Structure formats: structure tokens, C-alpha cells
Image (cartoon, rainbow, N blue to C red; front, side):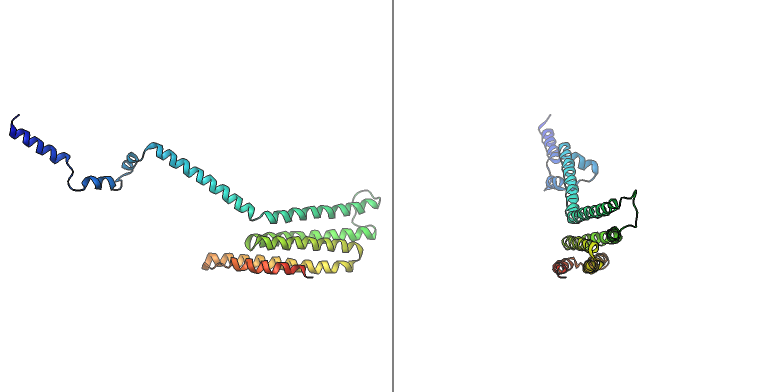
Length: 225
């Protein structure tokens, strides 16, 4: 190979292998032109780590959402369980009075004491579904703590009503009126919370903070007979 051929070969080699300007930098920083190009650039071990990270994040998010749901309803569940225990107590009183009559089986009529305890229990049972409905709607759509407080006050008033009914029917009147006041409070909380939900959906206006503040302020006033 002569000198001229060697010089020509070197010039061709430089022309093909030496980058012009910043072409190499542009190739390094340009986005991938296809999915296959992207797969070639991303190591396989990085994909495995990325998928496992997304999986753990997803599981953590699910657990957190479940915890938030339970935290937002735990007080309502406690009040509901207390009300169930109270219902069992009322039913036990009815059964006890029924056995004192020395009759076989359950009868709806009997001594004046039995009829009073039976009617008191029946009146409480009739209002119980309405109480549960407004309690949970108020706690979910408006504010949990004031709704749970109102629920506890209603159970206290219902106990007072039941005991008063066993003595004289006139003694149960204050408990009956007070119970209606608490039910109205829970109903208004439910209504306000549902209206606020649709305001958020349709107009983007959220008054949840104000509703919680108002309900938290009014709920202690339920103690005042």
C-alpha cells in the first residue's frame, strides 16, 4: 500500500468514525424512537425493581384507604354495638316480666307491669331503624364525632324513656321529647351532608369544614333538656 492510499484510508476512517459536532451528545440524550429502542436502553433488573416498587406502593395505598374508612366509621360502629346491647337488655326485661306471669309461651297481654314493659320495648324497637339510618348518614356525609355524640345521647334518653315507662307513662314524656330532638338533629346533619355532596359534584363548592364546625358546636347543646 502506497503513501497516497494510506492517507486516503485514514481520511475515510476519520470520516466514518469521528462524530461531527455534537451528534454523539444528541444521540445520547434523544428520546427513544420506538418501544424496542426503549427496552434496549432500560436494564432488565431496573424493570423488576420498578414493578416491585409499584406493587408495594399499591398495597400500601390500599391498606391506608382501608384504615381511613375504618377510622371514619369506628365511632358509629361503637354506638351501634352499644345500641344492640341496650336492645338485648330491653328484650330481657320483657322476657323476665313474661316469666313472672307463670304462663307457657310468650303472650302480649298480661299484668299491667308486663304490658308497660312490653309497650316500652315495642316503642323503642319501632324507632330503632330510623335512629340507625340518620346516625350513619349523619356520620358518613357530615361529621362522625358529633353524630356519634348525638347517638350516645339518644341511647341515654331511650334508657330514660324505657325506665320511665315502667313506672308511670307521664314519666316517659321528657325522654320521648328529648329523643325526637336528637333524631331531628341527626336528620338535619344527614340532609346538610348530602346536599354538600351534590354541591361538590355539580358546582365544586365544598362546605364540609363549615358543616363540621357547626355540628360540633351544636352537638353539646343537646345535653340541655
